[in-house]
Amino acid sequence: MTASGESSPQILLSHPGVQRFPSSRLDLFVLRDFLSPAECDELVLMIEAQHRPSTIANYNGDDAFRTSSTCDLSNSDTSVAALAEKLSALSRIDLAHAEPLQGQRYEVGQEFKAHTDYFEPNNADYDKYCSVAGQRTWTFMVYLNDVEAGGATRFKVIDKLIQPERGKLVAWNNRRPDGSLNAATLHHAMKVRKGYKYVITQWYRERPWG
Image (spheres, one colour):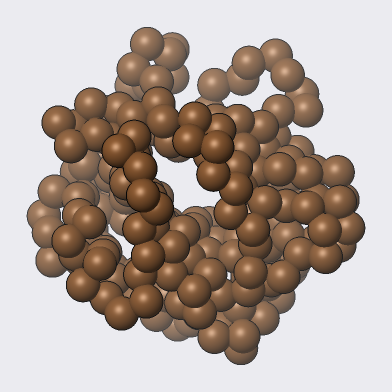
C-alpha cells in the first residue's frame, strides 16, 4: 500500500483488464466488470433507501449546476467496507487516505455540470475541506447500472465520452505527474434522458482522512 494517497499508471495497469485512455493530458483508466451485478444491485438499493439532495463545496450561483442526489455510505456496513477494501487493493492506496464512500443517484434531466473533483486553492472554503486531509489525489467511480438513455461522463478537455455500464470502473489522477492540479480532469455527468443512473465514488486524499 502507498502511504501518500497516490496510485500510479503502473499499479493500475498491473491488474488484468485495466485499459488506459491514450492521452498525454491526464491519467484516465477504465476497468469493466469491476463489480458483479449482485454487488451493483445491493449498492443501488442502499442509495435508493437513503439519498439526499447533492451539494457543492463552493456555490457558484447556478442552482442547476448539480441536480443529483447523494448517499453517504458507512463502513460499518460489511458490503461497503468490502468495496472500500477492493478499491484499495486495486489502487494500492492505504484505506487511511480514503474518504467515506459516496453514492450518487440521477433521475431524468439531472446532471452535474462540468467540474473538477479537486478543491480550488483560491476558494473561500479551501481550508475547510483540505486543512486536515489535504487535496484530493485520485478518483475511482463505478457505474452501478446500465442507463436507458443519457448519463454519460464527458471529459471535456480531451473530448472523451464514457458510457455508463453496470460494474464498469473509471479512475483518474486529479493531478499531473509533478503534483500540480490537472484542469484536464474537467468532467461533466451528463443529463439522464431515460431511466435512472447510479454511481459509487471513492476519493483519496494526500493525508489520512480526519
